[in-house]
Length: 247
Image (cartoon, rainbow, N blue to C red; front, side):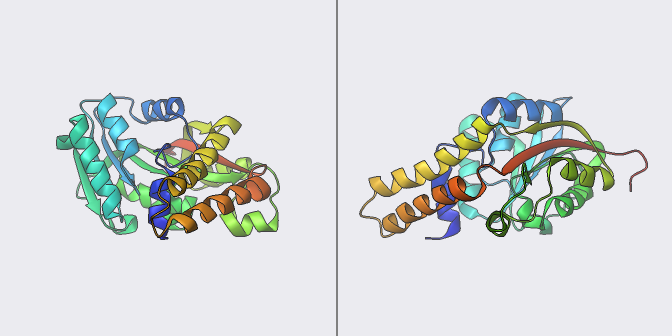
C-alpha cells in the first residue's frame, strides 16, 4: 500500500495533517492574515485545507497551493468549487522546491511538510524566496519535548528541543510574532484519529487487496506512537517575520 494512499485514508477524519485542532488553526491563520486581503502560498498544500480555511474566512484573500499529489490537488479543487472560492485559488502540481512565481506572497505556509525541503531551516530559506516585504511565514514542525530514545530519533528525525528550535529560527534571521505548541490533547487526538481511521477503513473494506496491509499498518503505527515517541515528541507552529537587517 503506497504512502500517499495510507496518508489520505488516515486523515479522513483529521484533514489538517498536523496535530492542531480547529481553534488553533483559526488563530494561527488570523495572526498570519492581519489585513484579510493577502496573497497566500502553501508549499506542500495537500488537499488545501489551510488555504480553503483562509479563503472562506477572508473574501479578499487570494491563494496558491503547491503539491506533488494529483489526487490531493483534485480534492482541493473540488472542495474549493463547493465552497465557492475556486476563482481565488490556483493549484500547481510540482515539487515545492521547484515552484517559482513572478509575484511575492504576503503569507507563506508550510505546516507539517518541512521534510519536502530537508528540515525546518531549509524550509524557511525556501519560504523567504517567495515572501513579500513585511510578509509572514507560518511554519509547523516537530521538536523534542524530552530526550528521545535512539529509536525515536531514527523514526522521526534529529529535531532540536523547543528552546533550541526557536534559537535556530532566530539565528537564521526570523522573529517569532506568535506561536502554538500543540497540547497533549491535540497530539493524542491526531494519532488516535489517523490510525483509527486507517483501521476502520480496513475493517469496512475487507474485499480490498490493501485491507490487510492497512490494518497491519494501523497497528504498527499506533504501537510506534505509544511505545517510542508519545512522551518525547512535540509539535510547534510559528508565525514569523524577517528580522531588521536580515538578508
